[in-house]
Length: 68
Image (cartoon, rainbow, N blue to C red; front, top):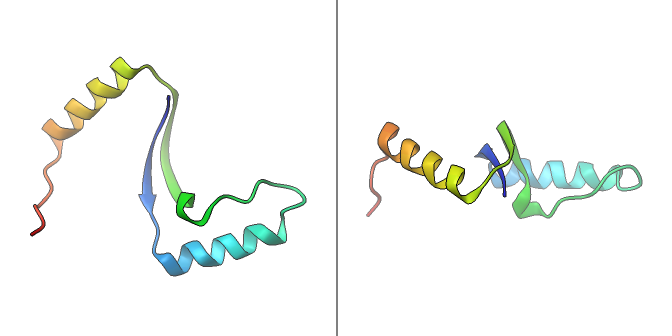
């Protein structure tokens, strides 16, 4: 599976980028609106094992507040 770290963008920015992509549809693939994001680090093709190890390490490294 292809793995990457990405930042989700605000809806308004996604919409603007999506509209811009349509201007270049003859030269590039236009992504679905929900797939637009900012890739921070691309890890490429990785195994399920590598994915599971990375998830475990991230859970140990980062803590996020719980939402209610």
